[in-house]
Image (cartoon, rainbow over all chains, first blue to last red; front, side, top):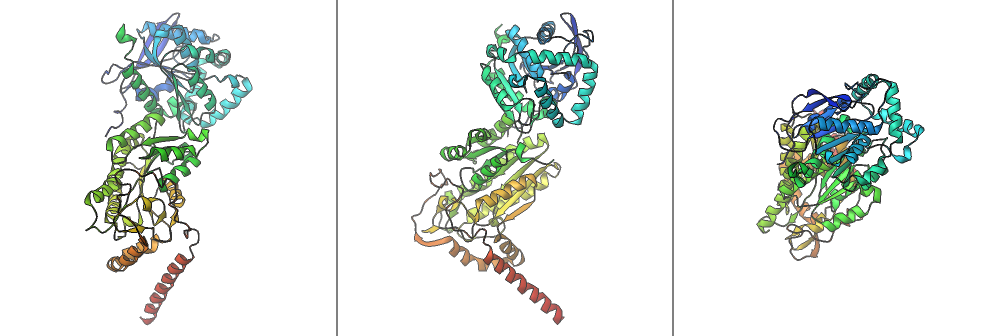
Length: 272
Length: 326
């Protein structure tokens, strides 16, 4: 019998590191036994912080170390002045700087929603940053790049959210500030993720929950097609913030993908 | 924890024909994602090709023999790795052998038990750890009325179906600690499926199902409903209940009296050369839901109702008469 993975790992440590001009707070989970798999870096979406990655992180951390940074301006990384919202490329820059500061390279980047736009930008700028890319419910569908349509989809998504996620989001929106949230959203709207995807030549997994009103199936399939080495997984019954709402379901699929990548491509780390 | 069919991931074994195939069709129609397991690649392809392109995305085919524990384990693990969960597992793959116990080749007899019983055990072993981890799930074992009532000329089948009930009931006791993991036994009577053409036959005569048969779709509906609302035991078709009742009330008498009619209802007067059927290798014929045993009396339960009603009336009269006499 080949059963499931062992129980969740220990509690995380908080770390504070500088990423360029900003100080970035992050949680780190170390697995009970190091198995040499690529470390996972979880990239959060809009406007939530690394907090909503905790359920997924706990389940991935049974077999590999997991980092969940709060990008500058969000969560506990409140450095940039409140009226200042970093554009997508600066958030990506901060992610790269933060990885560099922590000595992280050839990581497994796992991003949700708007975090996918940041993660893809970071990999485009620094191809050796990541050895595997996981896009959970990637935004932003070019067909829906209108405020009215986004508002409509977001309101539908609200109905799929659990109370725990909603509470977490309210707190995170207040910490980041509503103006920053709105400006960041505008940056996200103008970002063209579809132009970057064809240039990201690394093993990539696109995950879409079948009950996700924000990311339509057609767009998720396009993302997987645009990525040179992308594959799509549909998670029956899963929603938009899969990492928080369906953490076990997501972790099983993501861990299987990362194990496969680690096994077939031990990585530039080993080669270097 | 209530499973929603439109969000469910379900594994169905024996999906190439009969009840399994009907179950796949029903589940896919309800919006579920289905992993269809069978030995016959071509029959599975044919099943999947029956759906339009978008729906086809929700069917995943696995060519495997359920007696292969390693393969069944792999299917369970890959299902979880692909979809992140497994809501239900339908153990359904079964074969049959007709003939007197004293006359049939014993390797065939063993093969029937191996497929029907060990196949189910392999399924449960493969899926239960994942259901434990996720904290919920429904395992549906398709048994038979022959899980509770005996029949001559198919001792291997009956032995395996009784054993499946034993497995189901004792395992249910063992998983009492996991209150959202359910284990059910479906008990259909004679069903119109290709099982009878697929069976090994050592009787010398062509085999047919006893009438009236029910449509496999009706059994599939019971399986699907049971995934949403799990029950201990689900008898299907009107003819099963009287037989089960008599077997329980008068086991010795029923066993003795039912033997000859049971033989007569299974055999035709058409000679047929002995064969091992689909026991050791799948056969190309019989890939549909139905075995062509039409016209069945499904949907026209007049005679059954008359018999059941008559017996009931007789019993009531007898009870009343006894009371009056007392």
